[in-house]
Image (cartoon, rainbow, N blue to C red; front, top):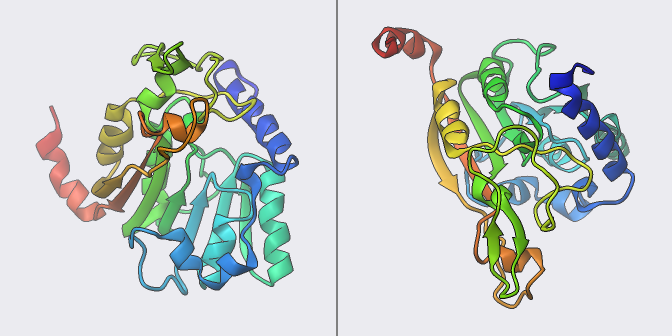
Length: 269
């Protein structure tokens, strides 16, 4: 974890450990009211089954005591994987407080080697792929641990949103970073959708969508969550959301492995 190509993981673990202890918006645990209607809170688009009771759910890179608690409250068997032990401690604390069972695993989202093949019915991942240098191992590992027909719900930062560097004198948002930027993103004045102290990476659409498909998934739906408010003033993140959608949410289904094997020769160069 300390090799040069993995240094960002050490840095991001420390950053999220700090955020977990700062009462940030990213470490707000599920409320009692939310736990009374967990699927409604988790699933505003109707992507999840009508019931998840008895299903195996992986909350990927999702520590913090929110997502895992809602799935467990809905009756799912929940495993949560996260890089930050402090974020996972919130999941365990809230599960213990509510008498729920949640399995916590400290690991990077691109290394699920402690989890067995075809173990989960649902993998649910909040915005987090921006913290790894490549999405390919994340999608590959997710495909491995999902059962055939399993659901993968994920949310990502849109690449153009991460290209914004600042706001000019006319309150226009400037695309100041190259689309084909390689390596960690530099510090920029506009921090509207950048988490303090973290190392982030820009992933292009061909990576977010193309690599997801080539990893064994079929995309069933795609949405851009609304983060705009016409009343918001310049400098507010919802003002910026009027001009550039920051996120994309994707509903994908794990293809049948037998079908994958049958189709493979057709796609060999």
